[in-house]
Structure formats: C-alpha cells, structure tokens
Image (cartoon, rainbow, N blue to C red; front, side, top):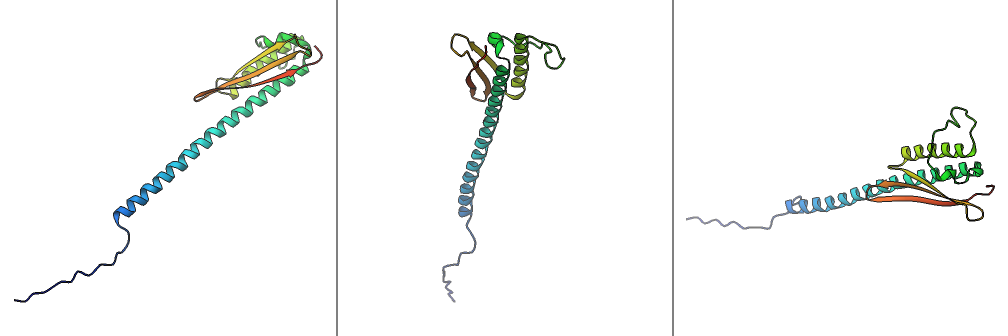
Length: 155
C-alpha cells in the first residue's frame, strides 16, 4: 500500500475576499449618504437665501415708494387698489397712489415669495412719522418674515 501525504502549505491570497468588499461598500455608502445630505441642505439654504433677497428687495422698493409719496401718510397702511395711476396715466392723489403702490407691491410679493404677504403699519405719533414694513412668506417647516422701520419726513 502506497501512502501519499499531502502537505497543506499556506496558500497565497490573491485579490479581496467577499467580506472585505462588503465592508468597503458599506463605508462608501455611508459617505455617499453624507454627501447627499449636504447637497440637500445646501439647496435648502440657497432657496432660503433667494427668498430673503426677494423680501429685502420688496421692502426696499416699497420704502422708496413711500419716500417718493410722503404726504400719503396712513394711506399706505390700508389695502391696495389698482387705481391705474401708473399704467393708464391717470392723475392720482397721494392716497390713490399709495393704494396703487400697495396693490402692485402685493402682486410682486405673491409672485416672488411662497404665500408672500405684505403689511405696512403707520405711526404718526412719533416725530418724524414712521412706517413699519413687514414681508412674510412660508417655507417648509417655518414661517419667515423680514421687517424694517423707516422714518419719513415731509408729512
């Protein structure tokens, strides 16, 4: 009887084992999820910054309109009406121009901001009289607003 002995010599490893590949895949997946989360966060921050820019621009626009029509007083705190002061060339009084300004401004806020609302409060008891301009809008999970107070001379 012939007996042969096999000697189990240690084998040389070639390539990667399946476990190593799975661990690398899990680590890369976690990293990619983190990158995706950062991307979503940056998109939300960019959208919020754009809306804030629109709100500041709208508030500055109405502040300039108020300064251009300082004799309107509390008429800016009332609702807006399309009185045709600009587009139709109608000769309007100061309160009519204020109502037209608020009408146009409210349309712009509705077009540029989600659920955009505008509100103006007139305080004639202080010297010089002042206006509080508030622009508000809705974003997912938050109601945001921008408020400025401007004094206006010449009333």
